[in-house]
Length: 414
Image 1 (cartoon, one colour):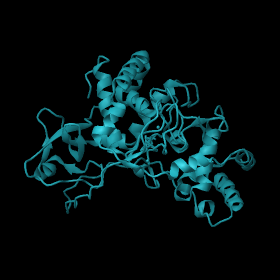
Image 2 (spheres, one colour):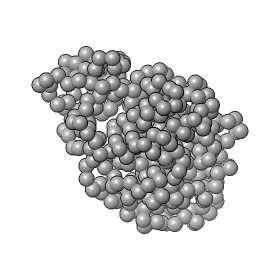
Image 3 (cartoon, rainbow, N blue to C red):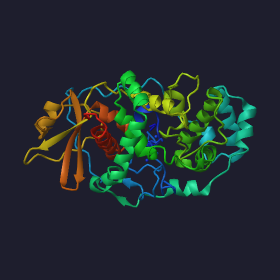
Image 4 (cartoon, helix red, strand yellow):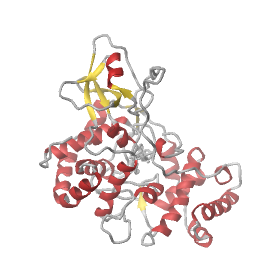
């Protein structure tokens, strides 16, 4: 998100080095994956943050989860030429640039990179240099984090295999109970933001099993390790380390030497990375602080605000089941941006089933379900969920879990 995703989150939630929020982490989260979007024991691969793109299972789940997963490799179809496509969903105005090469280039001696980082953090965020040096002196490299980040995905997992991880009786009952317990606060945030309460609950359910497990790695060690000892993602994580120091300045009630979360650095019930925390966390109870670790009012408001920042449409549909015309060619869009008019998709042989919601633009989603191929149209609000974790399967799991929660909580679902 924020996100498993991912990171994920995200979930973060988890996918390619993030350059800005459009390519967005637990956060979730962690993606991500994103996801990138966010386990009494740690999952064997990194939590996807909202900048990550593989379909991986968020780390922060109370039970051991399978190896990270990637979606089946399918060559994208050639996009239609010309001006028929709709405009992409606008990116949020906030940017999350990467750290410069003099901080992240492994050819530079480590101590020089650390010194350059202090200068970068002071220059970029206005933090105190002595404080940065003092905290960095306490940070420790964790080999287990490097091993987890470097471990490749073992195999592809289909939607039929992925769905039961999150759409099971325990997760559904837990979501309904969590919603019932916190209904007043959740419904208030939903009314203010336009993000239905069941989607806020579903994000928390997928990322941390409703707060049951939010990660047991020290955030400082996790991000420090990845910033200075994991060259492929060092520009992203060094920037996140800078945001961690800025977060401490912004939220002095947080002790960044004690915070714990995922081994990708996502924290709290919603698995926000430090930059997501700074940019999109909200003070939900008006106490002057944004506490995503154990203040539910702030958590609810912040997850909703993350969705709003990435373009959530109040009252808008998320997905629609689609039919495929006999003989229609396979079509896999290059992204989940909802840029295809329904008429264009119909020309390709894909149209919403009768009674399903419609919107101006959509993307096509094709999954291998337990009963065979499934085709869905993903609308703008589906795209927004993928900003938490870039995996379409993650976003679909959040959507379907939200529907189950709403159906058992007196809501009509959406």
